[in-house]
Image (tube, rainbow, N blue to C red; front, side, top):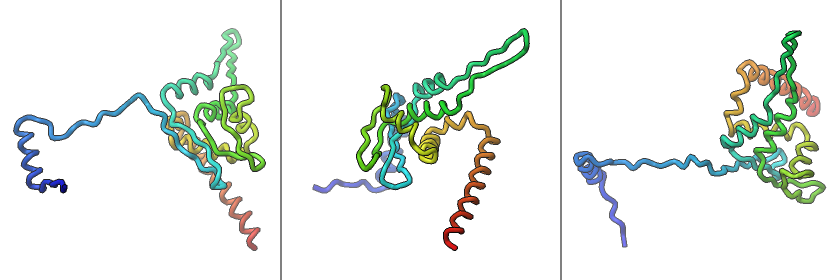
Length: 180
C-alpha cells in the first residue's frame, strides 16, 4: 500500500487554512531540562583505550565548586591575608566527578572501573597516569563543558596558547633531529 505524499501546493493550502482558522501550523518541541546523563568517549592517544566522561549537570557544577572553593583568612590586627591553595586538587576533583567509565588495560589485562570508594581504580589511575594523558582527558571534558572556561581569563588562555606553541616548536626540533 503506497502512502500518498501531498504536493507542495496542497500542503501550502492546508497551512493557509490552518492559519486562517487561527490554528498553529507548527508544533512546539518540548525539551526535557531534567538532564539525562550524556556520555562522551575520549579516545586515548593509542587509539584503542578510552575514558568516558559525562556532560556535567548543575548539581555536578555545585559539587565541583564546593570541593574547590578557597578559604580566605584576614587578620585585622596585622592586615595579613592567607588563602589555602591546592590547584592540583581542582583537576583531581573535576576528573573524579566527570569520569564515569573506561576501557583501560594494565599489563595487558583489563582494569575494572570503580570510583567513590577507598582504593577505587579511578583514584589509582589519576595518581599513576602520565600528566599528558590526564591533560588529554581534561581538555576533552573542558571542551564539552564550556562553563569550566568561565574561571579562565583571556590572558591566561593566551599564555597557555603561547606555551603550547613553544612546546610544538621544541617537538618539531626534536623530530627533525630524529629524521636527519
